[in-house]
Image (cartoon, rainbow, N blue to C red):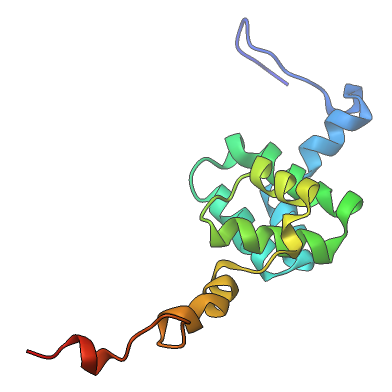
Length: 134
């Protein structure tokens, strides 16, 4: 292999196993693993790769690796929660899993449970026709 003076080159056979494993887990591998976990995880990894692929590769690998510790079901729920709050980052998904927030209701479910208060079934609500008399 001919290289330019001062440039570096590494022979893959000389790389340690963990470095070689990192190199083999490219963006396509991460997307495939995320798809196997679920739709929300796949969308989250796609959003990570939408901007700066190589800078976000470690984050995507970390998200996929969280499956080993928390399982696919919890990871999928955490990814969905991160997407609901428009924060698709590794740190967000990890914090959601660590704090057990993946089991909490989604913002839509929370809003639906509060909807009775805002649709006229509140304890101190007055009928609308009594408020709009002129």
